[in-house]
Length: 450
Image (cartoon, rainbow, N blue to C red; front, side, top):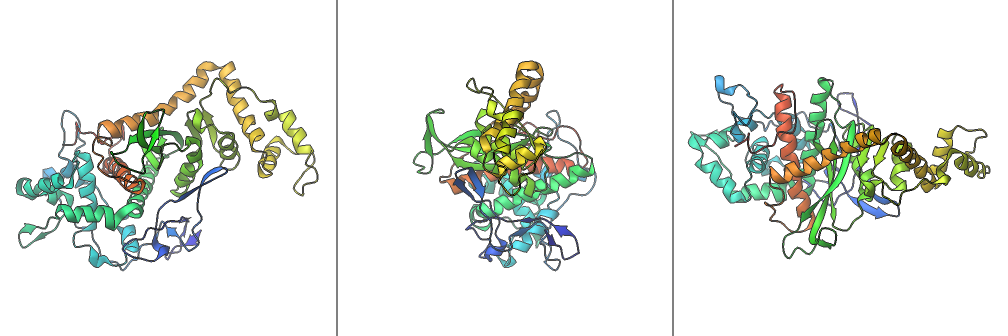
């Protein structure tokens, strides 16, 4: 924890990354970095101060310049298939002030930004919502809209009677150089934080139940970072994601190599959610996430109930029974933290702390196996919640064109590219929430945003 200038205590995200924002100091960088160890990938500790969720300088100039139309048309109307809305008009109702306020603290030299920062963010969101593959197409849209309606809606300034519009090179530079891996991760996370806060005011707890899954993303021809995966029979990457079961939104993601093991990325995903202020109670995933390490650590160290699919080889393990666990615990009576006649809860924590991972994990998996045998309908009802992640996969691919619009190579560029789609999804939801709309939140749909 650290004290905010206004006296509030705030969380610090301690992370590691080689990226920098506009050449700023390493203290101001933000991105997740992972190392694969014997127990899977872990977030590498950041050795300096790190990233604060409340770091804005109050004296920084205001970059928000959104131009709203006057009159009846300025009122927000929730788009539907029967009454679709122009995507730029929809985004004119997106309040990015909380995100821009934080970004200004990390971009030390604001002279680099000729165009309003919020307008540039709306522009890259607009590109994904309307399915434009190339920024040349986006540039055409900006320049050829009736009476500059699109750039006006996105928030670009009018100077001497004309709206200043960026060209494709400026947009590309903003995405791949100004933001890059670090900046797009930061924008995505700040949007999730803002959405969490907004929903909390309504009594909605974002991310209480999480479905985890990975989806393949085929690499472009000649991409040396893309690995061939025999199961999917293609050269690809994996996108691991944590999806809120109650809202259908993917709140965190990690891009990995094609043949990395899914289970290694579960705890890093959960830790990322926790750093965004999201308290997870339950996690549901397929069998690849059900490692003994994940069963044990999520239940014991994170207090999260876990439900993973079971393979035909998963059988009841007697080393995970209370009697065997107690016996193993008592055999370690010489340890300084040994307590006679300890509770089962203490025994589980003790054994995990002393490296007895498989037996502790087996204890929780045994309970899940017993539920499947005794109450198969209840078991299936719980596990079926995992399909929320699959629905998000389908949505981001079919509606926004995640696969068909791919035109970059290399794992870092793939991460930036996928971040843009996740930002668009969260932005569409945030727009509706900010304007008082309730109901289904997954709204980035090309049948309602044109």
